[in-house]
Length: 129
Image 1 (cartoon, one colour):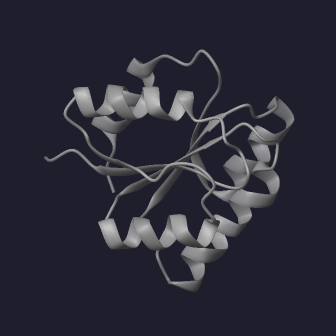
Image 2 (cartoon, rainbow, N blue to C red):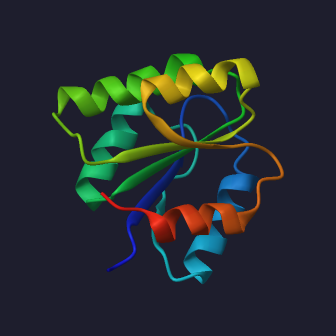
Image 3 (cartoon, rainbow, N blue to C red):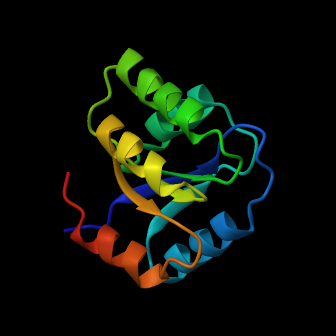
């Protein structure tokens, strides 16, 4: 079974992308087919790029505190395009009280500061669509 294709990106005005770049490089080094869109993307542009690149997973890094505003917009964009086969994961600073909300929305994995790269790679290796 081949490894899933992954799109990593930053959504909104959050310009802190060091963590996303570290994850991108680690996934690349592990042989994962991964793309990085950079900073200041819109939910619409993230979803359009994910569809264009035919990815299995969208990984969004967010440190701005706007996760409860931006993740619903990502899911709305996926829904508008009738896309049901892309998994969404999150990384960044997300308070515990908001994790349940994001999980109920459909976010499959939430990683915070200090998360182990092996956890991410393990999730990817076990990933099944």
